[in-house]
Amino acid sequence: MILFKTERQEAEWPDIAGKLKQLVELLNIYMHLKYNIDPMVTELMRTQEEQDDIYGKKADKATRDKYKKKPWQSVHQYGRGADIRTHDWERNQVKDALFILNTIVYDPKRPRKKTAIHHNIGTGEHIHIQVM
Image 1 (cartoon, helix red, strand yellow):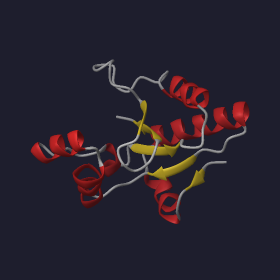
Image 2 (cartoon, one colour):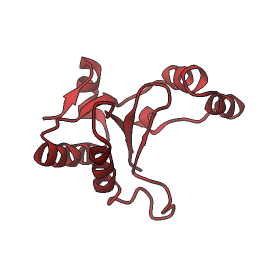
Image 3 (cartoon, one colour):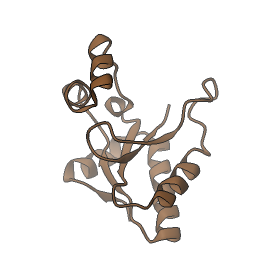
Image 4 (cartoon, helix red, strand yellow):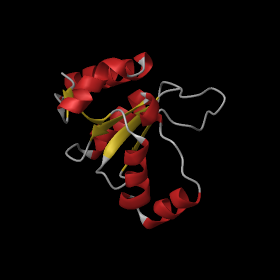
C-alpha cells in the first residue's frame, strides 16, 4: 500500500501525472514484494513559495547561492514530481529502488537526466521521482 505523509499528499494524488502515478505504484509493488516495505510519499505538489523556502533557505549553502542567482521551477509545481521517504531504508533497498525506477527513461533527448535520484536538499533523505 502506498502511504502518504499527510492528508495533503493523499488529496493531491488524483491530480498528478499518470506516468508519475504508475512509477510510484511500480515502486510500491516492487518494494512491498521484495522487502515488505510500503513506500511513503512525502511530497507531490509544491507552490512557488514552498520552492523558494526549500532552495532559498533549507538547502545547503552552495545550492542556496545557485538558486538565489537563478531560481528554477520544480516538476513538483506541475504534478510531475514525487518524493519517497528513505531515511529508514537500508542502502541496498535504496539502490534497488533507483535501479527499478531508472529503467524508465526520463527524456530520450537528455539520456543523462535520471527519472529518480536519491538526495537530501534539506528536507530529509528521499528518492525524488520525475516525469516529463
